[in-house]
Length: 235
Image (cartoon, rainbow, N blue to C red; front, side, top):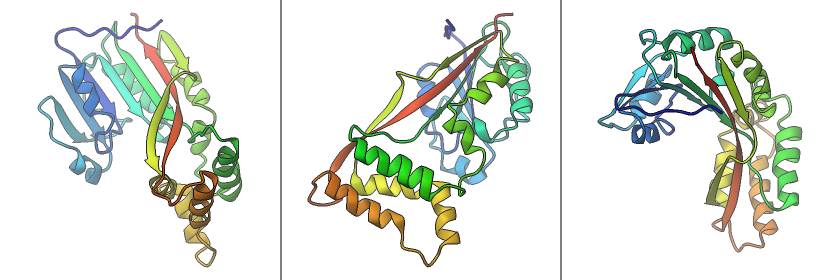
């Protein structure tokens, strides 16, 4: 088992931090946190926090000295990285021994109703949007198994958790459909099929019917599975 130890002076580094959604909680456990992202506009949206600094940077060239970081995290982004360069850099900056790398992603939304699961994850995700996703999306569909194989080359210990961890959220049907509209494959589909009906209009209408709701303001339960990889340095 990999145990993340917290000492009095600790540093966490969140790579591809975006606007800091997964960075902020780290400040509850580490005395200093650094968030980096390649997109300046994302960094500019990150909230100010006394224990956190946000900088523009990449995972392939980390602006941190050797053996200085207790924890490196990557949330929903590692599949976009150069695996070899990123893991080489992450191992370089992590403390030896004791440094830990936590890489995680979340899969497709799931529902208790099998009809809705089929509608979203088969009819929409697999069939309608087939061919519109980047090939990198395959790593998420494969629950980061290829990334796990690469990670094991750089860490003395490696654990993969693919069950028991979820993101659970209550949201309106309308907000869930808005979430679907953020999918890159949906954007590509709309750009390449400008004269076709918007599939999300049909999905929103059908979800209202499936939930026997009065409107798309009905609150529903949505869950996303989390796939987590932990790498530890023991020497």
